[in-house]
Length: 152
Image (cartoon, rainbow, N blue to C red; front, top):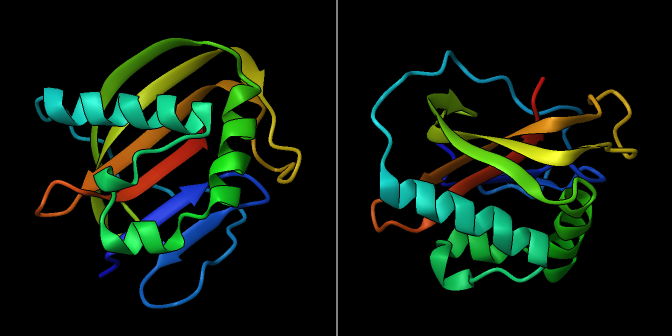
């Protein structure tokens, strides 16, 4: 079981951690069918805060577990800020259910930017304004999984 998985589609800055170094991905891992479990307002607030923090290039490391903090570099935060900033303002941010992603139960949010976001480092990914944020927390409520990916 992966204790921490943090993936961002840039150069591609992905760290799928299970005691191994960060791995590059060619595309976001497919997720299982999304369930329509009830939305958790605490998780929604946490998820929204993460996309806003990454877009600003300044995250609150106290919200992440030790594995996450060990693998999130300042350079990665900067790359993600640049990538997500390409879309301009966030037009919509909405709960879209739960799914299993990379073996982890995650909560997913549909994010729509004002402009389509291209990922030139990965030309096989779609250029779209519609993205998905997936997030999971550990038993202590710390973020253990976070993924921003274009909606496929």
